[in-house]
Length: 392
Figure 1: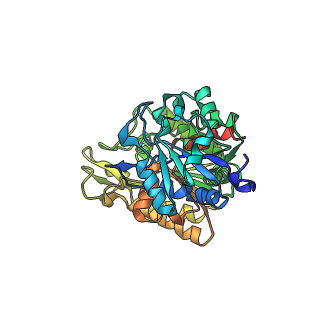
Figure 2 (figure 1 turned 60 degrees about the vertical axis):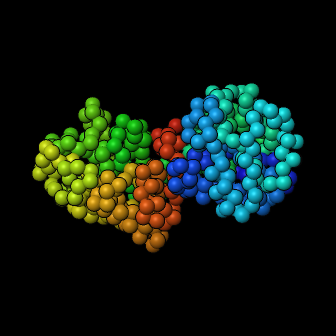
Figure 3 (figure 1 turned 90 degrees about the horizontal axis):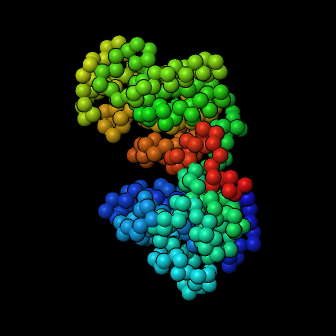
């Protein structure tokens, strides 16, 4: 990929900048601005080089229809405040903008075209739509790694019609993921959670040959606990996963990757209840597993101490109830301690994990935190992402 950070001759150029500004909104207010904060370095770089920036982005899934609640207006206001510059939201129908001279009429250095998914052609990866968007700028920059697994017009098709570059955040994302997939410093450990094994089976299978340890936590650990003959009560589990669990266990043995599952757990009779520590053979039929127990936490911390690289995707428990957030908090603390001593390179990804770290206000204490969901997992599966290959 050619990175925009290596380009010198940018003055007065019209930059079509694809960002992922799909932030959560609550009654028109941004409830988590992490995705906006991460792309500020790219914007500041382009501002410094005296370019005119035309942002392409989306919120939600309007499915080709104009939905007022999914306007980029709150994003515009947030950017304006953070950059201390005037930002203009252009609501004009994109098809009525006939050429890039249209943008000379605005004094603002940063312009945002209204939600690109208001146009059905975007998600259809429509060639003519991409040609039209490309005609509005001089250079295309993709700084939306989290959308780069999509074959959409402003991610994939557009790069055929303009000089195309990666943005600063996309560079960081790819470099961080390369460190845990190809440029590995061993021992490497993966802590993986979430409720569904089936959604992460390909990630696990692709990573196991590269890993020294894989630690299974969260809801998916319940399938492993049950596989080994333990009653899991009314705990969440994914059905019809016996063969998937067996496959993971056999592959980890074949590739000499140690597979670690919970040895003890915290249970309750409901999600709002108090926690009780239990050994695996003690779980009652009306109890549910909601976090890892102290023995398991200590085992994971010992493994982190022996690791040089760590990937964490998925919290260890039901952190929405503080009674079941301790496992995730202890994992976070141990990784941060080792990172601060330069003993470990840490990559964290996944919406729930990032939400938990934001809650603890420690999201900046890791080497790299990815806000990409599907793209993050597909990259770890070894898939080629359309938005990345388009820049190759």
